[in-house]
Image (cartoon, rainbow, N blue to C red; front, side, top):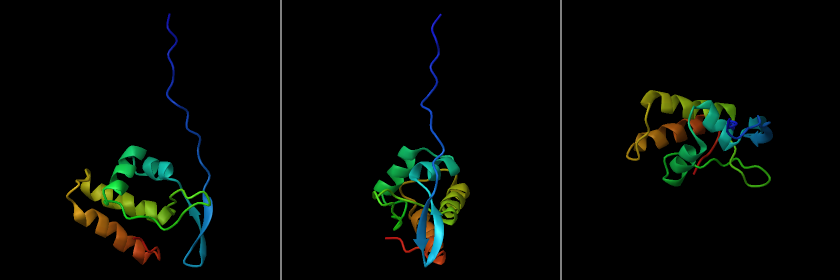
Length: 108
């Protein structure tokens, strides 16, 4: 009888406290963003690589991209309105960038 292996175990990451517009916020990893919006990390990386996701200015001390809860919510809402995100959907990026700007986060 073959023993069935389970997939890789992912532990819940803790947020990093970051300064956003002079206020302390929780900064979350790309993995947390992906989990919250029900997408994979490779999908998020693909969006970033192709300019569909604005560059977050929030970084960990090690340089990892970080997202606040409000930033994650904005991405999730934009994804929810579309279902699928097309490479040709320029409004996806601008919608997220505008929402982040309203939150006091200046993206690229």
